[in-house]
Image (tube, rainbow, N blue to C red):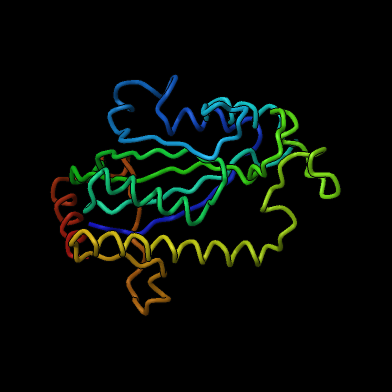
Length: 238
């Protein structure tokens, strides 16, 4: 069943390389149990010096990004279970092109099995940099320096999030949430599915139902068979 989720977070300098390995299920995150839920990985818009290697890009971000600066941002997105993996990839490619044009990114699609109900839960992680390449050739260390508006060739790539008011960034997030819902619905309709998603909260939609309680694996294990059956029934009828 299609359900809506979009969240965004930032990762500080020193965290990017490890997180990229996590979403790509590499290194210590590449154990068989974890790799089984990895459906696809992809990257794009990397600067020339990264030579098509996202791990190198994130490693250099960790090493050279300004102290206390965000080395990456990440979008976490629920994917419609009705769509096939290749449709998920096409959906994400179109979203990245529209919402993150030209920005270095790495994405991964995971499809774990829910702890309750043996239901697949496809979702995506999109790591991206706010430093959009501008055609000026730079070394890795210069790429992550402070932008020089007077002489751009002497500074780093400009961060498009820098200097903007919190209200502007909030409005951008609201717009991005709506765009993600609209694009999913376009793909669902184009592929013959009746399901639709809505980015608005229950309150904004005039629905009085409280938000669903997240049980987590520990909470689910504590449930009796009767409680599990009742909970599954409520989810199916929601």
